[in-house]
Structure formats: C-alpha cells, structure tokens
Length: 423
Ligand SMILES: [Zn+2]
Image 1 (cartoon, rainbow, N blue to C red):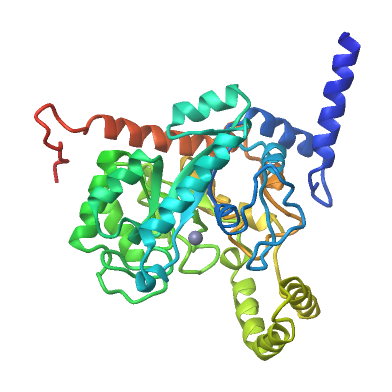
Image 2 (image 1 turned 180 degrees about the vertical axis):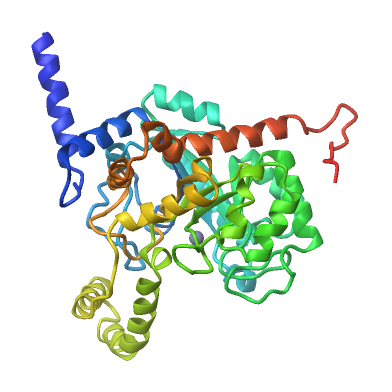
C-alpha cells in the first residue's frame, strides 16, 4: 500500500514536471528547488485576460488551451490544468473594458458581462473558488483550489458614478486600473492627451472611495502624474497589476524610479508584466518597425483570407517568422524584479503576467504553466526562498490585508453617514 502510494506520488510528480518547459541550460538542483517552491507557495498573479475568450469564444476553463488561438489571433496561455502546473493560487481575472466604449457606450455593461462569465466558470468547476480577501486565498491554498479574483481594467467602467463603484465592490471587484490606453473624464492615460493634469477632483474622490471600500488602486496604464496624484491621496497600498520598471526599459507602461522610491512609504506592489515589448526597448522598436514595414503585406493577406481566419493567422505567423524581431528570454523578467528590488525593496515586487493579453512571451515561456521559470531565475541569482515567496504572492497578500484593514475601519457609521478620511 505504502509502496503503491509512493509510486503514485512519484508518477504524479514526474508527469507535472515533464509538462513544464525547463530552462534550456537548467541546473537540475535549482530547477527541482523551483518546482518545490511552487508546490508550497501562495502564488498570486495580478493580471490575466482569459476573460476575453471566456466571453467572446465561450471558452471553458476546463478545456485544453495549449496551441489554440484567441478569436483575435493571439495564442492562448491559460486553462485550469495549466494553472495547476504553474502552482497558481490566486489569479486576478481582468475585467477589461475597451476604451472604444467611451465612444460607443456600454462600458458598465461590458464589465458586468465579464463579471458574470467569471462567476459562471467558478460555479461550474470544483477546482475554482471565488475569493475576495487575503484570508480566502490562504484558505483556498489549504483546500488545493485555485482562487479567481477580479479587477476592472479601465476606470470609465464606473461611468462616472460612485454608486456603480460601490456595486462593483459588492460583486467582488478588488482592484481597478484607473485608465486603459485612453484618457477619460477623470484620469489621464500613459499614452494619451493629458487633459486632467493627472487626476481630476472627481478622480481623487474615486481614489478615496476605493480606499474606503477596499478596492486597490491600479496604476498600470496611467500617466506618471496620475501615479504621483494617487500616491499623494491613497491611504492604502497601490498596485501596478501588470507593469515593468522604466529604469530597465523606458516604456510609458512601466513605472519610473521616482514612483518606485515612494513605495516603501505607501506599501505598494509593482506586479511585473511578462510582455517582451514592455520589458525591452529593442523589442518594442523592432516590433513597431516590423508592423510598419509589413503593413501592406498583412492587409493583402487579410484580403486574400477574408473568410478564413485560421488561414490568415497561419499566413501572418509565417510572414512574422520570415521577419523575426529580437525577443529576450524569460530572464529579462527577473531584470525588472531585480531593479524594483534595488530601488523600492523586495517587499514591493510581485507578478502580473498579462497572460492571454499579449501576442508573444519571452521564450521558452508558453503560458501560465511556465511560472517556475521566473522562480528558477530568481534562485539562480541568489534570491532566498523567503524573498521568492514574497514576490510570488506574499507581498500582494500583505497589500490586500492592509487595504482590508483600512476599509474595515471606514465603513458606514451607525447614523448612516460615510466615515470620511481626514485630508
Ligand atoms: Zn493592460
């Protein structure tokens, strides 16, 4: 009996280990240690866009997504089995609302639909559980379940209403990215016109109400001035749910050093994105040059295959393969972790992959099952297990707990009035 159990454990272990991508030059000692840490750790990822395919393709999280494409042609990175292989404990699902809804309307409805599709997937899969607090994430780890949490991407989803914001909290939203790639009525985006000089007065009110409720403020996608405005106002830690460090790659989607330096006081966590074009300036440059160079050819291929998406994507990928760009390997992610650790401190780094929201990853990474590559590289660079556990999820748990404590102290008072923060 004992022998059979041991054999079974051994088989399980070898199956799960074999299914992951090992570093090409792996030191077996570090690799075994990385996998061991992943079984033990509470792992939280700040940003995953699989909600798009769940909504638009009716994708079932129990199905195998390996090798499949989203309806827009990008590769899929996530499903339940892949989460399990990577050791995921708490996955923030992106309730992403396109900036186009500022013209077309329907921002709030899109958010409501994605919240519903996320809840329905949780209801039909026993491996998944809905979480809204740090305590629930810890509990799920004990029960060997994967927590799904939710964050809104695009603050215009509240349609300028604190009433709507409060209802989003009640539905389980625990962070909100104040913008996407578009400036709106109360906050400026990283790459768009600076209409509000950061946050407008109402934008500041939104941040205070998020603090009061217990919704973390997410500074990915906002302008540098908004980052500082948030730091001036917020009493809770902020997060960047999927950004890198501008000190390593000078991209407006990344967080500059002067913001990193304010994190020890704020308690915030920068969850490092895995998108090669944000992580490396050379990739961003070569990617945009290639897009411009191949624009006419891509348009011709689109026309040629206008009724056959699969044929178009195959032809597009062949064209890209014939016109390769520089993409650094997975170690580049840890360059950003290193930098944030150096400037802000290890307490302020986390993971925010953006899986299923990006067209390519740092090789040999293929999807959420390959998170141990990042842990392996941290081990190789001499990070202690304690530091790695902080990056993988410990820091985000701590930030959530701080936000929850603050919110508990500022609920509606007995006479029905809202307890306000002192300015
Ligand atoms: Zn994003």
